[in-house]
Image (cartoon, helix red, strand yellow):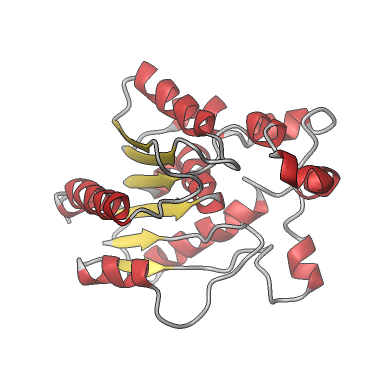
Length: 232
């Protein structure tokens, strides 16, 4: 079984070295693929700028290409691939299930973006000086409305085929809880299998140890249910 694990940011990167989440998944029988899709930092300005206004587009293509490579190399069973990520990685999880639903058997969205309009319109006050930069790098809700609608998973839930697990902090200042509420409500209204874990005392990512334990136990049970029980 394979887990595709796009990093958050998205203007960050994965490094060689110990990663406790990857080790946790590996210890439980899952191989993990991490990729530095375009926009990942540390690869030069052109590679970074190649991500501008490419959420759900070429940035997502890079992730999809990783899945297809695993399948082509016969490393992965195409029927038993899941995607898991947090923040931008959560968005990539939802985008993967709406834009390329044939690639994934399950997904875990951890504090991820579902609606590009509400995401851009809830930029917190302490990020206000960066608003114009975000409009340039992600998209302007007015000038780029068509583009943003095309890559907002909440408007594409009819494309989702596989079960999802969504986790969210109720006090998240950057990816507001409305992002997860919207996608969960849309999925449930269409009868799609979705599990939803909300923690009232968390923000952008779980920090309380008990909450982290609960999240990882629930995620593992979800993955085992939908990947390990699939026929090879």
